[in-house]
Length: 166
Ligand code: ZN
Image 1 (cartoon, rainbow, N blue to C red):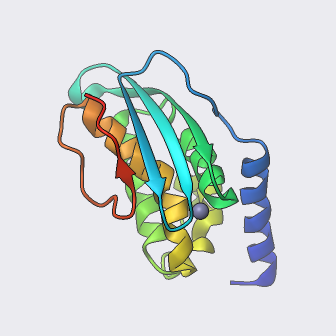
Image 2: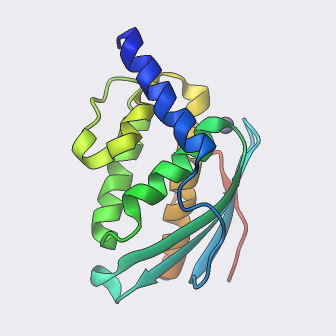
Image 3: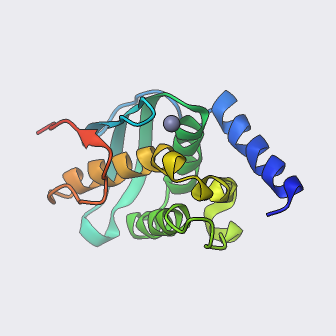
């Protein structure tokens, strides 16, 4: 990765950190979760508001209160920008792409059409200690969504813990 690209990515992350999109907890919501990344001390409380039944569900809103490092907070901002207003199925697909990017140890080429500002985290994927920071909000969203849908919380949120809401 070139130096220029690296600094561009850092700038995108810093922008979201300074001016987080969709921050704050809002109503209505069907599920709220609290996830912690103990290795860094990042925390997020996240609410999900879905509309429509099952496969036709739409992500109406995702609101959150995040504390912690710039990567974890910027990631929450980028995520909400990417998934609010999208059909749930599409949002889950974006989630899968972001997770693949972050777990690719720097070998996955991000698709800017899908991940938009999320590509800025491609550089973070090379640092295993920071991957959990970047994934914290995404895991929280997946967990909250699973709760809305009445499914058991999915695994794969290793390193984060959540408190029961229902
Ligand atoms: Zn962190």
